[in-house]
Amino acid sequence: MQLAPGVPQHVHPAWPLSAEGEGERTGGGTVNHRLLRLEIPVFPERRMFRVHDAGVDPDALGSPLPPVGTLVSMNREQLWVGSLQEHIEVKLVLEEWEGAPTPCGDDWDEEAKGKLYLRGLLSIDMGSAGRAVSGLRLAGGVGDYSVRVYARNREQVVRLYHELFDRYGDPLGDEFQRAKKDLESLEQYLIQLWRES
Image 1 (tube, rainbow, N blue to C red):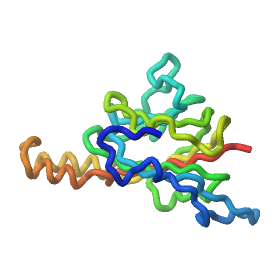
Image 2: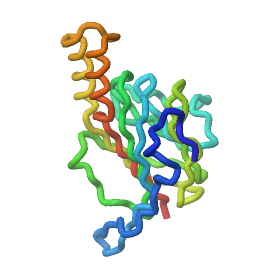
Image 3: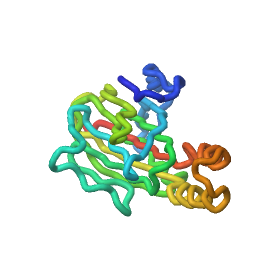
């Protein structure tokens, strides 16, 4: 797996953990285990970032439409996640599960669901900023994956960012830049995926 230049050192290729002991019981009594967890900063270029099969060109003909006014836009091999801003780094947690995890919507503002066909390798693309992740190997291998996307603080970050202009005026000034840095990772996304049986 390759991480984008500038990704903090605490995000290490060994960071995705086999989550032994990190499972949950479903209504039928079976235990689903989390197979991978990756937490990284992502920069939403043009108010979005893209999750897709590593072999797919995200800009190719037939790509999804930009997720304007919605949380996600999808086609068979790509998931485009919409942000409401394009100036602040966001936090992304990506999880692969052995089976469907219990929904966690109460802790999140928004939720979307879908399906992706992946060939066992996944990339997270930030447009001209490059790839945050390139070729992450999935335990589930090739096949159809169910996907849940959760988001929180999207509107709050937009509001707080615009308030910086009223408070500090000069967007190039030190005070503005320090306050802007404090907003990083406040907008958060959780993407959970699991191979369909």
